Length: 471
Image 1 (cartoon, rainbow, N blue to C red):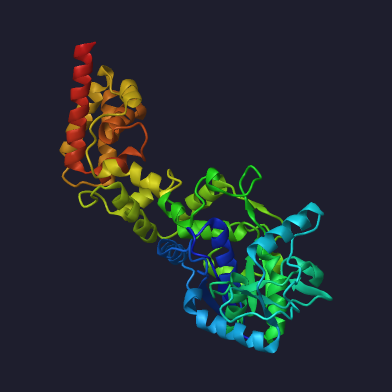
Image 2 (cartoon, rainbow, N blue to C red):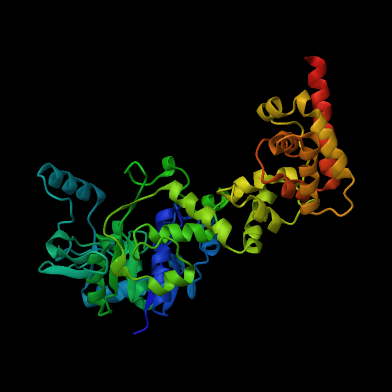
């Protein structure tokens, strides 16, 4: 049997973290079995579905690299198919027209709730002999079995059983003629030959209804696996108050897709004590029986740790491609400085996100308007003037501009003045970067360049002179 899975989001918002993890698990299950993966857009909620949300879902899937083999299919383009099946079910007696008014249904619900009963349709039109005109408003309901149980073996949770008496006759077509979500899903899974449905635990109650419809149609029933929810670090359901929950927000915040994928796969699945997984390892090792039944807690610090790992262990040429997007977003030109690959190598150990790296790299390309106040107060003092003047002179006379020669110029300045390296390096750092934080001074000055470094030291000396004059 060829394994075939699907990811079927509703386009009513961004691709959130829980949806992305479900998409990943479904994708990995298919890839592990060398099967196929379908993308289906479940856009039957016409009021809330938007093109913007569809684009956001596609962007998220593409950024994560979760490529699909079929689709995207859109439910709104398949209404003729759904309605043809519903008409056939009406003829066969597995569905019926219901003419109950909203007022009757509201009164029934209120009475049931007052009596402590679970609100459900009472089957009033199920065997009604009343005659109705063709244009009389009605819905179509599925004739759900009234005896026995629906039992299915959840691939993650084990056996689950629902009594058919707990399931009422589900509406499968609305008064306006549009088919409902639960029915569309069934026909799609049947037509698309889906063998395994991997989705969130909020769909568990839908599963027995969908199984009963499939059986009524004589269609094969796929295997189901329901993934637990993701909680915030406070134990409550993950939401905007916990920070970014949309996948593309993580891109905007400076995370690599590899880091988010690695984090999401471990958010409910494990393989021994291993924490770092390449995509190939995920595909080789992923199985549903290793997915936890328990809810998982999202931990941003863990994600940052993974991101820092990938920034430093993926090829710098690849990381630089993602970094360039952030630099473009921050609006500065990198044509006047070092290659971005060099920035990745220089700042990788210091930065946990690419957004942070982009911000930290600005001084390599642009002159700054002013020095960091605290760093300048501490290090750009009259006592530093002599060291800055001498190192400026030595740097300006270098003919072969290399990191080694820059290092020698800084070291010889300290040696000539009998100073510790910090007495030269820290004023120089503030002078050329504007702040008190940077990689080692030889590689930093080398990357900033000769003319720019010499000019910035001059600016620092002017700052010291002005500070002295105002003292």
